[in-house]
Amino acid sequence: MTYTELLGRRSEILKRNIGKMIVQDNQTGLGGQESLFLQRMIRELHQTEHELQASRSN
Image 1 (cartoon, rainbow, N blue to C red):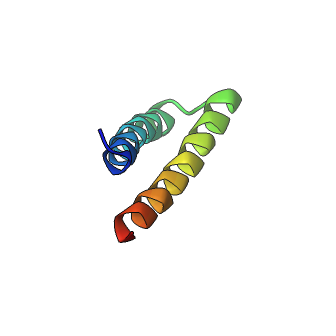
Image 2 (cartoon, rainbow, N blue to C red; image 1 turned 120 degrees about the vertical axis):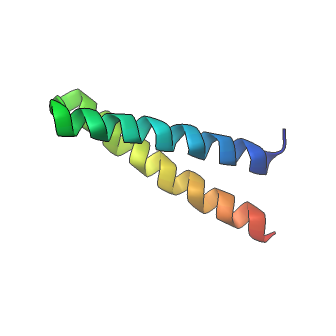
């Protein structure tokens, strides 16, 4: 698996997990720790997307 494929896979997993947490937030709300975890995953997704875009342009 190449680095670009790895970043793409990681991005897919993060998007799926973020989506699940957003649904949970809409239905029942998130606790403080869950909310911080969601924010961390969103930051990771942005970083991964940036790295993915940079690796594809090379």
